[in-house]
Length: 102
Image 1 (spheres, rainbow, N blue to C red):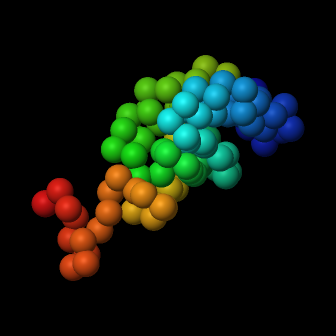
Image 2 (cartoon, one colour):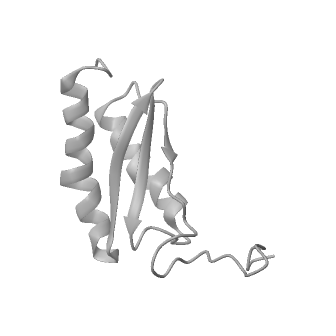
């Protein structure tokens, strides 16, 4: 499948809209397709997914797998989300800038 072509762009967008987003909407989250470069899909997570402690698990085990099934030439997924931002992020920086988990 041609990664630069309109067919694969539609396929990637369609899998996110029709399958991925409905499956994570129950948690108030969504995924936005930002770009595809060098066979890597760049996404941003929002809503309940932004800052969620399981965001990386969901991306690898579900989102990446589903996209790669539709477009086998995709080599991986890159999460561009700043998980420290948002209304109520799971990962919040301390005033000192240190991780609360350290």
